[in-house]
Length: 127
Image (cartoon, rainbow, N blue to C red; front, side):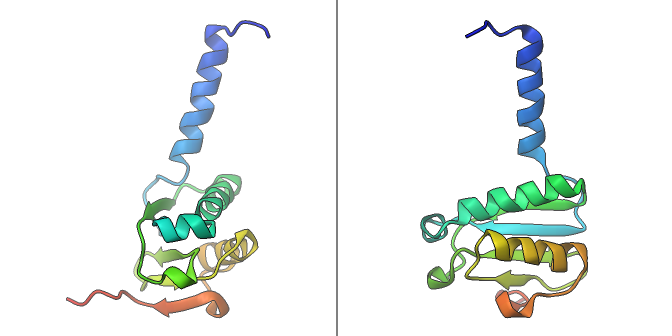
């Protein structure tokens, strides 16, 4: 194996930084992936990786991808919450990578809620 040069390390570091900060811009849309132990065991890490790939491939900087713990609907994992600025959040459940892609295309990019995968619209918190 050839020795790494400083330039190689800088290239690797730049690639990793880009991958880790994808979607960390000012947010028109916030996508939260639920990564509690129930979500992780149901495949939520694959969903997060797919969502981050979709954001990066779309070349958009106004979508923030974040994670949180369990939302209390363990039997409905993997799950994401999509919140478009100025609109109520939508919780999507029973996901796989294909469904996450459809939600990304239709809700994040086009602004249409994907009702067949939506558990609910709005926050479960009251003021």
